[in-house]
Length: 100
Image (cartoon, rainbow, N blue to C red):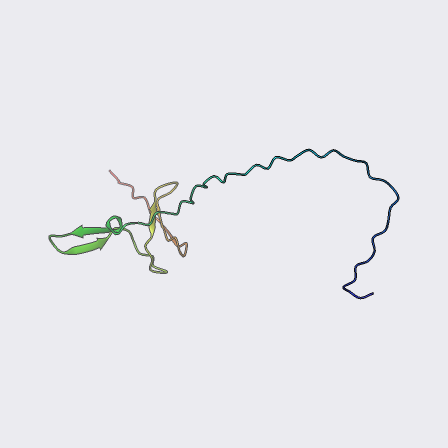
C-alpha cells in the first residue's frame, strides 16, 4: 500500500440505535468590550521639577540614583526610604532625634 491510499475501515455488524436529532439554535455571541488595561501614569515634567522664574532656575524635586543615574522615588511607609525603580538601589532615611 502506498502512503496516499486509505486503509479500509473494519466493518461492524452492529446496528446503531436511531437518535432523534433536535434542531440546534445557533446563538450569536455578542462580544462585550473588554476594559482597557490601565497603564501606569507617566509623571509630568511639572511634577518632577521646581521652577523659579525670577532666578531662572530649574531644580529636580527628587534625588538621582547614585548607581544608574535615574530619578528615585520617595516612600514613606513602612520606613522612609529613597528607591530606584530600574536598578532597585535603596537608601534609608535616618531619623534624627532632637535632644532637649
